[in-house]
Image 1 (cartoon, rainbow, N blue to C red):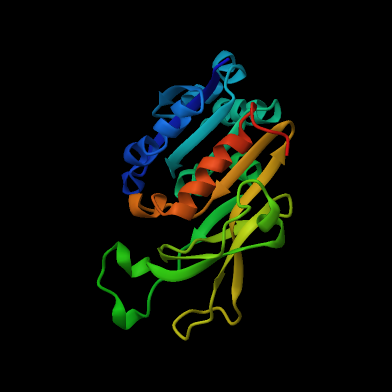
Image 2: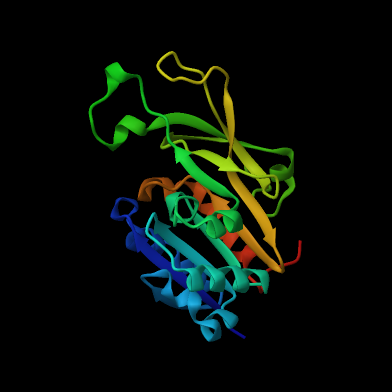
Length: 235
């Protein structure tokens, strides 16, 4: 029996929502998913579609969401639909919706930049070399088991979060003389979240296509899709 995946993509074009999600469609097809693609969250208000959806993959940076749409999303996840995504496509979506922020459990706050004297005034000003460090839970969890800590040179997300998140990996923002904070900040980089009967998986790496193609990032996203899905294992 086929599972049903819903891909919701759009918002800020800098994250290449179409190209980014296209990277993962063959994986979903190979794993037995029938895929529907929508370019706005309006589908979340369609109770019939949502009741038949086993997995939502969202890549919708910023943008807005209506009350009936976010209520539909929350209800679907609570009833068992999996919800996953990466980077700003899930952790920087619908900034004005507190109900969405509560559902996801982590919200992008910033990505610190380079030393002012090194700025060239393009997106690479925010590309820092940093490590994604697995937590003890992450070393055992099906999504990240067998992976090692890994290093990326890309945006390093600073995320506001709550204790309902089960954090599988973190990243640490160091103290730098050009920044105003005075101690290192540990931020979740990969987390899961149980919402009713549903599972949520968020990976903050994923700013660009090359980051999504990194073996560890891609593994986390693909395993996260299967784990979050209503048809996934119960481990």
